[in-house]
Image 1 (tube, helix red, strand yellow):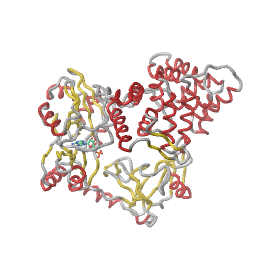
Image 2 (cartoon, rainbow, N blue to C red):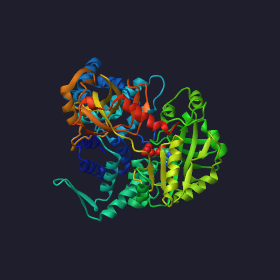
Image 3 (cartoon, rainbow, N blue to C red):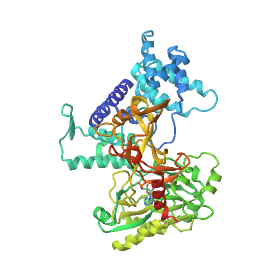
Image 4 (tube, helix red, strand yellow):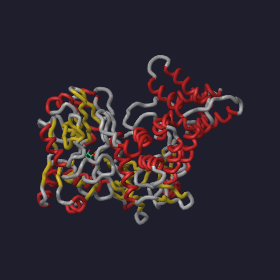
Length: 585
Ligand code: AMP
């Protein structure tokens, strides 16, 4: 298939923010795609040549891309640099240069999807002497055969900044629309989806596709299975060792009675720990892989855990769902997530980090054992299997503390006990439910204390990139301390792209007249506008001059009714911080 088909699809996706329209555009492309290009198209739609869990990078810096562009078009690197500064997007620069160049040279071969995919894949494998030149050569070959539009997207793919906004759910729905055209179509004029089957049937197909994706984390694999034999082939997608599964997540509730409403009373309660998710795969003796919740491989960073697993867990091969809990090596008390989080990306001093920031494996689930998928067993059954597998050893590996009761008073007591021990709260798991990977959760709840929202002042902002250069994309939040404004975090979440009162555009409009200073993308804003902000937690932090930072802040609304003088103070922040951490003492 010609690459121009894909480039046109990207262009269309970039021009529309409407999800249904995006879905239709992608499904049209998938319908046209022959089997031998389907894998490539699915990866490229996601802006990569690898599945999401693969840690390999394309490995092209903007400098290399500029060099290739200079070589192909005979433009100087300085000129490209200056164009780049003006446009803020090398993709658009490439498009313009190829456009001018095309007027001079007439001959070029048509680029195919597979050719683009092949060259880009080769780039990621290149190492050693002469790499830069060989990379430039491969890229140049693509540029010299590309149309302006193709050059735009080749460049962005190379730099891993595609910016066409395709969410996972959109890709899933596009597959459904492409492979089940008799069940669903799209009315462009009315901008409506038309179902030619019942909503239940549609949802069932969607869930099957989503499930296959949750197991494989690979839309190429799902697409190829669907192309082969529709839903039947999806069954072939099974758990694979050394391929992370999207972890099961929980719905938030605010009380035990709300938990009962969601799941009924048959609940296995567990401590909700503040560590980080570790999915542990045992492939064979001394052979392990560990993945985070975001499917990053962290085996090397946590290799000290391997002998513990080897010694304390029975099974020739398995997949465990765990929380890796940091603790203070001196006091042995649990430490909040942010201490251990430094280990996730760390590539050097690994042994020292393991000593300074040790973790205890808290196991709470088993998904696979000795060649058998256990995900379809009930929660309690899986827990029983787990109890037989793990030999507990304090500060090395333990089973997450649990309680099986239908008595709300006992649950409340367990909840208090968990908070007192420094945990986040409780997880509640319906005892008969199977393991439901991914976001579409049904079966787990999380119970955490509700945080009081803060009213904070916007004192800074950052201009967006690419398509969003005309609006701010993130905002600095401050509290007050006497006459001063002290920053406590940055936020970009909670603000909508469109169709809301609280959009990036509307906030930019309100803040633009308040700009005090501007340096590159960063803007200082006169403290005036107050916003209400929710968050998961307040942490101590050297990054902000308040000494505190908000974890996962989210804007709820603009407080037009409040002036900057009525915003929350540093004292308020300290009070909430102490209250929140009382349970830790
Ligand atoms: P949240 O990050 O608030 O959405 O909560 C979900 C996270 O809680 C999971 O991804 C796990 O990392 C963590 N967690 C802590 N304790 C447990 C537990 N007992 N069962 C499942 N997840 C847990």
